[in-house]
Length: 145
Image (cartoon, rainbow, N blue to C red; front, side, top):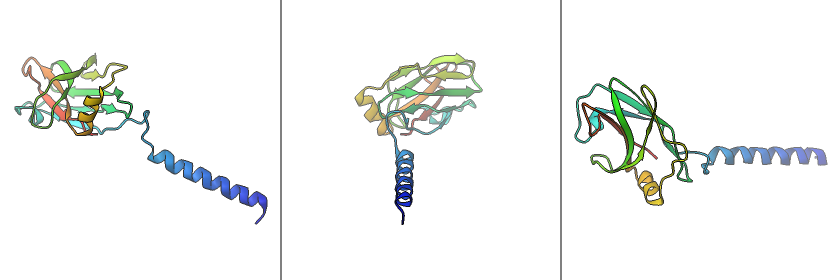
């Protein structure tokens, strides 16, 4: 095998390894999380609201939070990220900002504290949207790390 062929083969191996490592990377700029669906059945206590929503909130390894919530079928007053496990209510830790009718967003620059991030990793954060009809929360979904 010629020296040129050896260099080409070595370069191809390095590029393949770099691509593999990049695909597995979840550094501070690669937020974690999954899209979730908000319903009244997930509220505590559950309700029979026909409203629904979806959230694409992400939490990165550096604890930065981004994304938001879209909702339909209700007149929303406020939306928040709370800290509590499934089946329980907890305190507001991130108030969301209404950006348009049917949409709330995480404020730019939002960061979780280390204990809040640990709660997120344990599945103990949720997002909900409140209304005049359901002031404690009309629709909810647990955030998934």
